[in-house]
Image 1 (cartoon, rainbow, N blue to C red):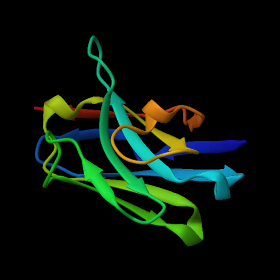
Image 2 (cartoon, rainbow, N blue to C red):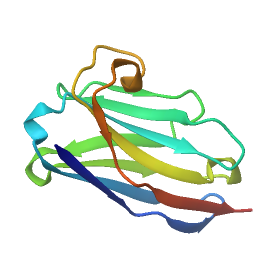
Image 3 (cartoon, rainbow, N blue to C red):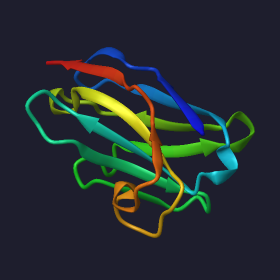
Length: 124
């Protein structure tokens, strides 16, 4: 089992920045990729960014150039640096740790773990 705890959400004005963290514990050696997802009220869940065990990254078009996903293996943490935030970025952000992954959406491979999420609110 793997436990994931997100932090770093909050209220920020448009144009501001936030840094989200996802700390993993448990059988973390089984994780091959971590994705950050977000879901805004009334909208479908969206994959925001992914990082693999080989440090390859991918981003949704909506956040490219603004968000950066990174990892700190010593702290078992995957972070999401979010810059130039706008109200459309308002959502609950969750991390997902995948046990199997090749490319695309980590959820497509199943057998993963979710954190409970952290709320990001961007005011105009």
